[in-house]
Image (cartoon, rainbow, N blue to C red; front, side, top):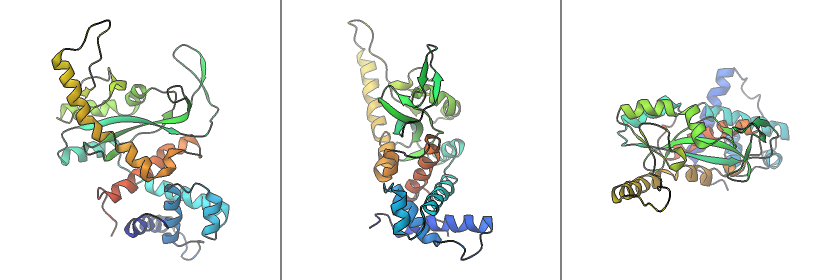
Length: 272
């Protein structure tokens, strides 16, 4: 049994059908109808990562199953909001703040070398923090925890602050000037004006002042709900718990999962 709603299946099927019309695909030339292709795609997102088995279940070849899933990822990812659209909607919805967070998406080994800040050759996709190969994803969430936007994936060796500087901080500075501040954890310390992070404990035997401790406590209380954004994505769309495709595909897979989540939370209007 596929634990998703029929309206979601119909929504994905409509997107697939629209793409077929755009490409001029002849009617009746495909092995599966858009509806059953949508079922296959959603089964994969829900964690059934044995694509040959999915193909057998739907009576299509292994190659066709891979191609249909790749089509679905592309069609869904194309519906994901870009950074400026996400921030504009946050403004329009009257959000008091957004939450910046990062996560590591485990992936199969990818032998790609890079040079670290010490001038040493390292495995780009290996995260020393998580002790595994992974991709680094940055995202913005609403105060309620609903994810709003997802950035391009960076190799697992890239620090959260470095990834944020590459993909999102410039837009967040402008948003902060327009009364939409950003809350983040201590990993983003030094991000700049408008990005609120906890105040670090002083060195030595010194302790934070009562005002600073209160500030940190309030910041954690506001940020904690928003940090469920990645948990919401990974828990619902279990394919994000470990990616066996090329690590470069993590961005599109995560954005496709974001679109599915937006639909289920009535944040993305259904297609007529």
